[in-house]
Amino acid sequence: MLLRPLAEGGATAAAVIALTVLVRLAVHPLSRASVRGQQARIRLAPRIAALRKKHERRPERLQRAILELHAEEKVSPLAGLLPGLLQVPAFLLLYALFSSGDRMGGHSLLAAPLDGRWTGALGDGGPFGQAGLVYLALFGVALAVAAYQYVRARREAAQAPAPAGGPAALGRILPLLSFGTAVTVAVVPLAVGLYLVTSTTWAVVERSLLMRKGPQAERGLAG
Image (cartoon, rainbow, N blue to C red; front, side, top):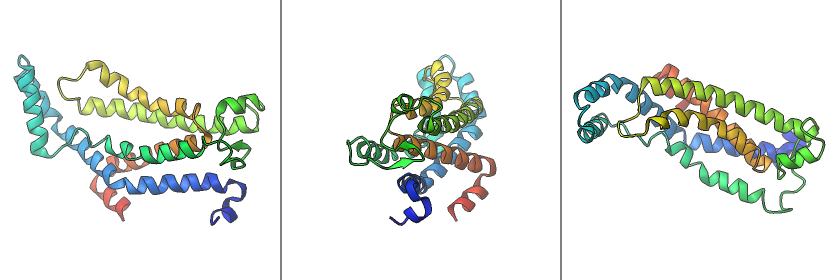
């Protein structure tokens, strides 16, 4: 109700965006830790390369040496996964809420119902109808963010190679997963798609600032 005077008919969509911002702020400390871990892995890349050369004929010894190095430097390979995992409850909550029949009927983003899906928009005016244009805008933002994430992930993978023992193909496949947001937007309720696009856009901007400016940016974002 507090958002209705500001967003009029789009108050619920504004509430979804506000929820996304609150979730991203809540996981921000973990995002900072993830970036610190990535920067540490980049810093350790020459030492890992030396270990690989030293133990190239002993993969088990190499794996132990890399794990010991990560433990010594307090670098967790799982740090980058935690911000995403902790957002799963919010995703599931929105999905359940906007997939529950008529409970959220009448709430929309411009001409597109928040509990509707892209297939419904295609059947009601086509891709360039009023509802279809809302989805096209979301797809456009999602694809632009995914393309940026793909380029960044490839660059970071080159700077900080994955630990030994992982499939080489995994490093080529993971950057492509960023395009999954656009695919997901096409099949989930619009409110969930709005959450995903807002969250991934926030994540890209946040990570870019942290990676570019290091500790100074962390202090600025934290304050």
